[in-house]
Image (tube, rainbow, N blue to C red; front, side, top):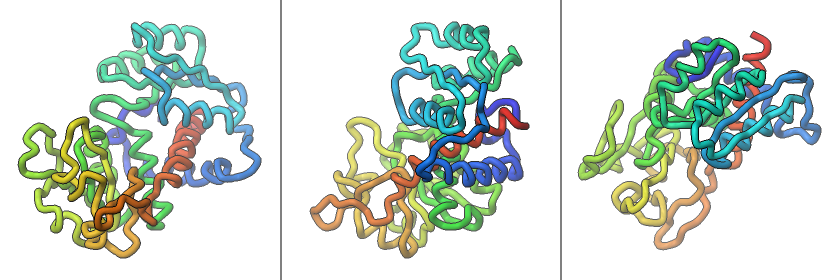
Length: 278
């Protein structure tokens, strides 16, 4: 694996290798001694608009494996900044931006490994973190029915749908019928009870500003307990923390946010390791 721009470029075997490697890396994340020798002498350059989950994860990933990470935030010319980091000799480059063409331009230089840290259409590290979280909670990513709810982080939907299909699983997306703005991908239903019924996991994509939570979640405070109870027993909630029970907002007992944070770092570690050793 030379670069990681989108997961739809990968095969089932390649995805399996990443998840298996990330599972091993997560042991380091969860251990008291967080120092492995795998990236000694390896420097990661990163360009992000501002500090975020991606930037923190790659800094920790490099540190845990004895490498270095040089983050750059808010550059006025992202492509020029990336080229500068490449010319200065970084081994890997993580970039988060909306210009999809820039990633391929950087890859064509062939001087460093390029990782998409989150773009308008794709979020490969985030989706891999979701898959690893799902595997951790369900012991498999095969033969599952996953439900996506919300209209914010929709750049995940296409990649997640592709990856789940490779493992014989499916992704359904609930959107209210009167949402005519969100671009629909894959199987989209507009009946919330039918969508939640029997789901093996629920992925909360979040809501854009000024969205009416009642339309997407059944309540302005979050997904209702009534809807979650329609899903499978102990259904994990990915990327969400709270649900609404009656009129009370409370933390959902099967929220996976804590697990996903460790999985996100583990995935970053796995990708950097595989770049170095493949």
